[in-house]
Length: 201
Ligand SMILES: C[S@@+](CC[C@H](N)C(=O)[O-])C[C@H]1O[C@@H](n2cnc3c(N)ncnc32)[C@H](O)[C@@H]1O
Image (cartoon, rainbow, N blue to C red):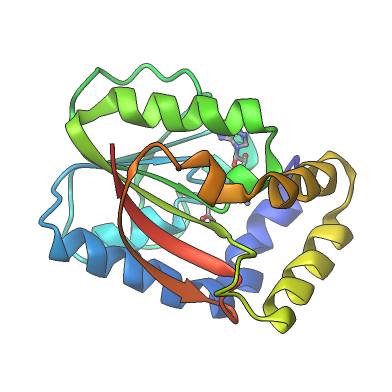
């Protein structure tokens, strides 16, 4: 999806009620596992990184392809460093970060691009480093109301975004994309339809 200036400006305001619990739980996992350096792929407005800055983290950075979303990282009290870069091909050094994140982004991409992001995340984290990902997961742990609500939202967005979402659900989403990596833990949100997961590469 292309985020124009207006949708980028209202992204956090509209989604905060749904996403704040996810943001806080992400910080909790990062604390629990003692991660110090964090890179957020497809960071959007930098909202998750703002939560980390607020919690006292300093070695955090994001990348996003949308100038309008990146402009929002400069709004407010906490202003994370976010670069205008493609998450499948970043300029970050190899083997540096404790953990890489991709939140709410893979379902709207082709499988090829989603895999490209995961592989790039693996490249930039330390050997056997970690990966936090939040996205839809329509498996047995999800409730109908959650799947229905998520599908309604994605249909409203429409276009290529919705087409990719349907393919993502059909091929098994995160369960398929992450099948070769070590699952550590998860927490479900929004009637189980959204999972926040920690993996080890
Ligand atoms: C739904 S938003 C999610 C933003 C943020 N991760 C969050 O949790 O709110 C998806 C973001 O992915 C970005 N994006 C899409 N393709 C990208 C790519 N190849 N590289 C970097 N960012 C990308 C979009 O610009 C958008 O900001």
